[in-house]
Length: 146
Image 1 (tube, rainbow, N blue to C red):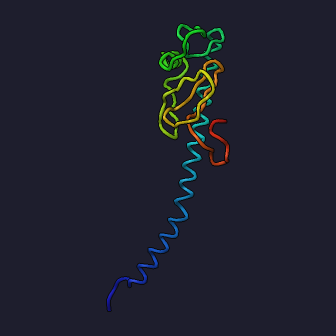
Image 2 (cartoon, one colour):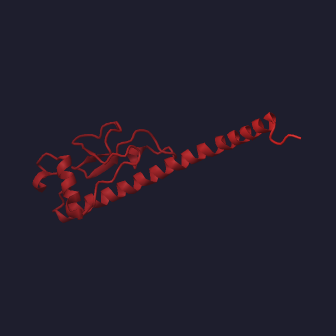
Image 3 (cartoon, helix red, strand yellow):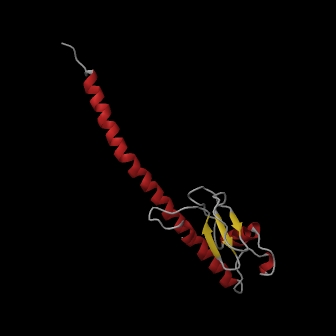
């Protein structure tokens, strides 16, 4: 007598595994997306806290301005140096978890549409910082409202 599985038995096992994979994979992807959303909110909180602490300690002038002069042109390098220097406010600029970028686009007027090339968009005149991510999250909340 031969030992082993018949072709029909093998096909049934493969079909069952395929069905299980079809159930598990979307659930895993959804949890991954929710984890990125949570990390983005936390990184924004960290950035906002650092911006506020810097402003409090520098006569209400937010980071980004050369010589802490709000009449000067705001600059990404100055922003980073002021917040990361000596690790006083941040040890590093946190990454946007959706594109793994930690660069900051300095905005002087209205916030532009997200192009997802930067990590963050920062408007020094109002101390607003947003994630550079278009669309909505898993709860249909726009990323621009984080």
